[in-house]
Length: 258
Ligand code: DGL
Image 1 (cartoon, rainbow, N blue to C red):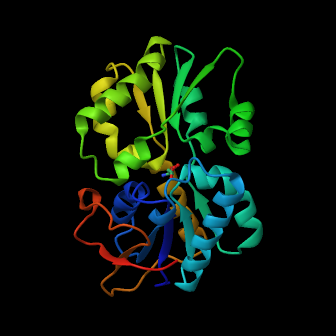
Image 2 (image 1 turned 45 degrees about the vertical axis):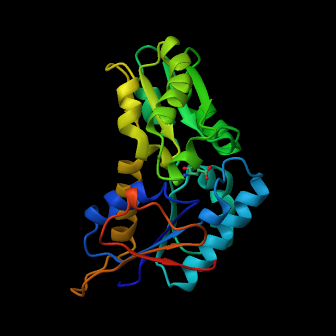
């Protein structure tokens, strides 16, 4: 089936998923929506996040997408259940990998860096309660200004380093041995996070498992693209032009009202 795979995020964050997914699925066409006019989602109300997510899904449906990937933890944790009730297409959403982190930790201390609304969401809370063992401590940190800095193309690395250090140090001091990246934007600063973290702390992101899940869904539903036509990857944004720091040459980039 040649119909594209639809992906959305509040901006550039989900490009970190697309980057890997386009390699895993070299025959597939993609439509990526960066709703950067409304970025950041992380400080909006649950109602607003649901309405923005629904708007993005409607646009992807107009593009005849065969599956929707929510490349935004904030949107997944605040809207995926409702979206699945409203939309009949398969929907896959990224969310913080609490389960793998809980299985991994030896020090029984896990750090989570995410947006305010992801950490405050019912889904995050329920997933935590379902998997958590009593003696494991979760140390949460809201990424406050990080999303905006990443959207703007990381002009001041020095300032970013300083802010990140102030977010990560309290978690390091709590003896965490893994850090969950609970916001797709943060994948773009993984190298700087690695520089700050001691070597024994593992960074857990969920891009790999989400992409594998997408592949399995496409196989199971028998909707993989078997055509030999040259594939396309279209990236649309509705606000300021996206920073070229994160964009591959293969992407056809354009402005779109949505
Ligand atoms: N990239 C997003 C996430 O994974 C959203 C960041 C934001 O818009 O606040 O949570």
